[in-house]
Length: 179
Image (cartoon, rainbow, N blue to C red):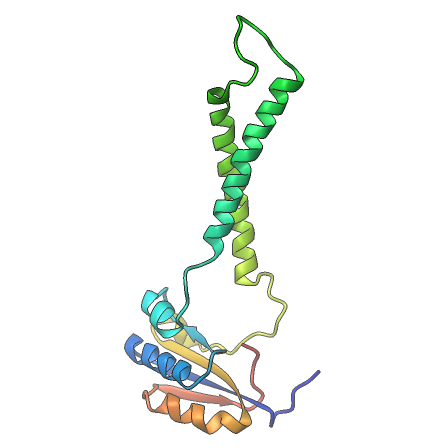
């Protein structure tokens, strides 16, 4: 379903300083806007934590669950192998857990790494089949940016919020992008 140009609108503000970008993000969140994107030339934890109010990445849960699954698989595989093909020598027990720790550790590392990659792809939304969002080349060479898609009825409020934080440049897109 195509959007009409009078239904949606987008604003892209380019800021020279991180503080003004974070303040603009806070003002947008305080006004009730949640679906906006921030751009930075390098990873900035102030922008992520303070400006966008992002919490910790859920990828670490994927890593933990993959590592625990791998360790259980390693212990299970070696135990099953020892019980299925017993090698009784010198009165030693069939299940010798200390000998299986190495295999369980290696399986934990392997499964944890694979789960981390899968979690990264899931949480990053890759592959991305959605429309491209707006981007400004200055955001790759030292400037910070915020892109806010809004309805045409709220466009003046967003314009006022962004201009109150003195952006170096403010672009309006009549078509709007999905963010």
